[in-house]
Image 1 (cartoon, rainbow, N blue to C red):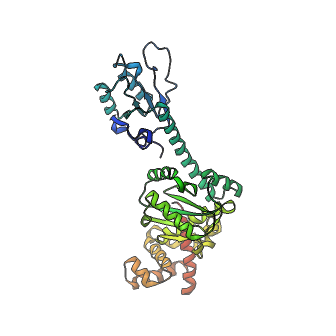
Image 2 (cartoon, rainbow, N blue to C red):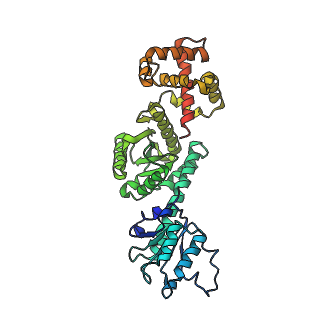
Image 3 (cartoon, rainbow, N blue to C red):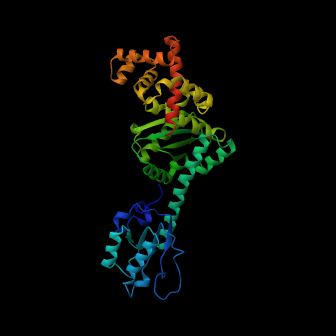
Length: 388
């Protein structure tokens, strides 16, 4: 989600601005700033319809209307027709707008803002433009992260991308992928912007939005795990992040110049496994068999094996059996724990497992059945959760 009228109040230069009308339009998008001077004054032979491009904040001192406030209504109506998102005026010549202007703005959900003090137009334009650039960077970085995960970049391109994210990162990095169930995508964008203003921590860290979560990139001069843990803790405190609400995946510690892309992929898949297993966090180096499956997860052979083996229980009417098989695998083949996880009797689990074995692998013994089922279920779940 891009910048909206509501987001303007988060900018330092506009924190004292006042909304005087059009509260219903605070979600209107902002993609540019424009300055209104004498464009709609009668008798001025200048067609500005092509210049006011819409989805913008138009700012003015209302100098053109200081001797004739009646002009303001026509101006606001024209701005609305041109799809301008909001109008902000500096009360230099006119302090309070005519009632008919406020009524029009309220009835059409067209926000009108009043400058809070002696803010300079140039500063307003600069801060809004910088914020728009940040928004574009957030989206561009997210798109490039997709390319890194799909291995569409070579090592040189990945390093160039890493330096674009933050040119100050140290030589050793570790990446943390975070699934934050408490935040909507637009809230994550706000968090990313907050991190960009995080001072000293900004020199060693980066935070990048990704789908419904984000990546945290940590860096240090030495590959000491304790230093990375302390840096993550400092960042969480500064940004107000409560790790109890997270599913987190940790990459190994690598040299940035050699393994940036690898760290991104390791953290991503470790987070996927944490979500699948409903555990707070997972470290890539401790993922066991997943480390063999993940590099080939998009292989046609891998997908074919999973679909062929699980075909009988992938039918919608067999959802309960698939759910039981998944719980059984994630409970490491322990029937009692599976029953507890499913809130049912252990004999019910045994009955379902026998039925599953008869449907998918009737000729195998119990040990071989569990091994084959475990691999197929893990492939299925990795594919499912990869949608993130």
